Image (cartoon, rainbow, N blue to C red; front, side, top):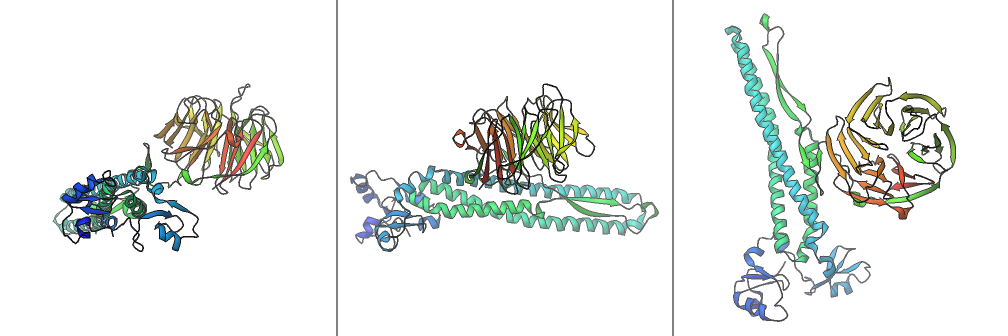
Length: 562
């Protein structure tokens, strides 16, 4: 434990008992008024920062227990062993860690720890979690009030219905009211139990935030550093609790209802019945990273984009032509569409040529429909003004049929048994494969060469004129929009990995930008250094976690996502 902060360390060494009034974290001891003056005058300590003991004692007990001196050898910590995750003094290194390779000066480890990304991220997470737990609490309280209001309304309806009947129904009415109250009481009890747990965790998170603030303001750098891992684990546990509550049945919205007996006019056995039903929660909580975006439950948990790496599996020298679309199908084969040659070409997983199918129109983007083993190819920009989606059967390797559309179609994706595509000047359209019926999902004046990806009920589409990526739901409601960020220049092909993260091919920045599914975080994961030159086509095969990127001309690259 750190030196006794209640007594002056200097006086205690001289066997004099004096209460400390300030604490010096660098000396790791308290000082009385007299020693405080000497401490501020001595050259070796005059630049030390001291704080009132009353402020220092606000630190959590587990932080107060942290000492800056090795308890075994009574020497100052000098290094940090990453292998054993512990601080070491000079003698510790000699006796215990002499074979450890990853030793770092502890001054380097704790330098600017309070302004580090890890420290600030925990601070942000604590604030967001507190906001989220309060949102859960408010939602449950609102549901309680709603239940009570519905209970009262239904009770009134029952009583009004009962007035039309004779006194014979008094007993039936009373039984039904009792059932209503019992039902409401049982469901309210469940909600109150969950609310009690939520409020308990809210208090714990509030305490964590207060402790974290005190650590940030008053703890030494080494104390902050060593306490960070412990607090991070507690933060992780609380995040798991919030997510578990959101996914649990207890978060379903409870609604009371009553059903009148059809035989009521004949004075049947029952006046009616009461009960409750559950609907999906409408709670919206804030995300756990920077920028402004929200997640609506159920939440898709996205793997942190900072941990994603690409391993170059293969580089392929393609035939001449302008590549506008590409796709990896589950057997590992790769498909490429050539705008100028009006064809789709298939390659084996090792990059060798298999076959090609020519069309009457130019070829733009590709979407694979696994259930029928077919691909849909949009015509895109065509001098012949033939606007259609061509369906190719991969079993027969022949054109199966064509679907006419009113304007030029570009990016295309599959959603269940429908095709979703970008139509120039009109927006996002949906076509049923069974009967070719068409409807508009998003009315938006999209420019040429807009591409789209679909994940559940969310649509993501690019706009080269705005240098933007837009996310909306299947009804066209805007979720978020990312615009004019670094390297998102002339965005084209887009695809989604198994964690819900987005990959966008950017022509003018010669790069691929990786974006989290909530639009909050992004980073450039491939650049011209990796061989990219005006990449337009991009596709991810989620089962194998493979990424295929094609330059506009000549080269394509296959990566494993790790």
